[in-house]
Image (cartoon, rainbow, N blue to C red; front, side, top):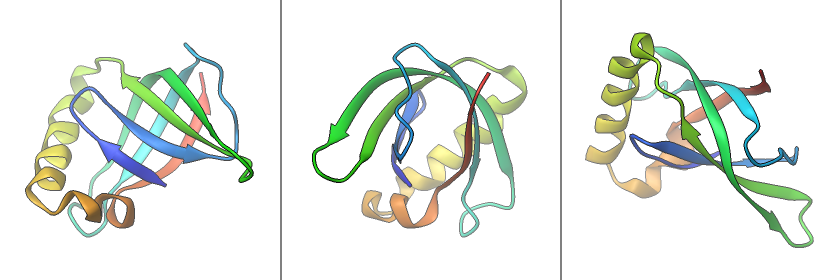
Length: 99
């Protein structure tokens, strides 16, 4: 689940604990806002364990990719024009894999 997204990165919930500085390939979609799927590289910047839940809050920083920047910027602009509380319900992290 995506908790927040910005031009610089995003925060999501994961059952997997990624190490800081791990490089990830993220597949992001927002079906209610856009038909586009976005694949973007990111670096794990912070990890926060949710006590007792066996899940982690993972904060990642996007690694610049010219080919996806326009789509990513459009998605972020749409998300931020809506109520920010709608982001977890409408922006999906379909996959986060180590690269």
